[in-house]
Picture 1 (cartoon, rainbow, N blue to C red):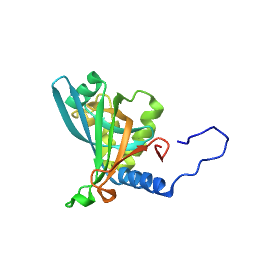
Picture 2: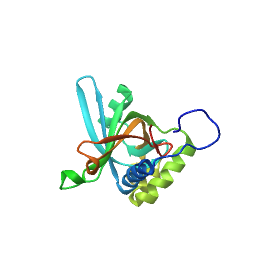
Picture 3: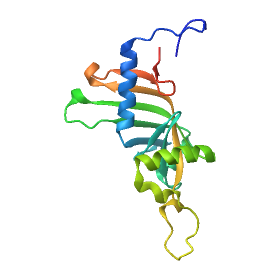
Picture 4: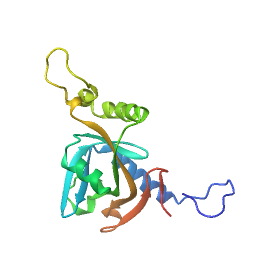
Length: 179
């Protein structure tokens, strides 16, 4: 994001800003699971899900009857965290986000996210097999799951090497730190 009048010239971006967004994106690409937190009324729930990131969201498969899906769709909001596991507090880093969960309905979006998902998680091929099995085999996993997207409305990069509890707002869609 840039500030000031639109003159066609790009604003200078602090190299440290680019370094932080690059660290956050490297973390997102390196990790495999995202913890999705949902809630309605007095109940809350957290569930780890495998994901792939493709702007504007984090795509994952889940059962439509899973508690986190039902709560996310009913409540209208969700939160998510992706982080490196570490034995030392100084090494903690991650991305904390709030946003919404939506069922992916557009075929083009399903194909794009699905292709990325299979590349990252080859075991997911059965997710794409739908319909009745003519051979009498039990239903495939693909008959029981749907593709969802967590769309962040706000995101923060946390890195304790920058200071304990230091959170930096990031724009995952444009690849820039918010100013």
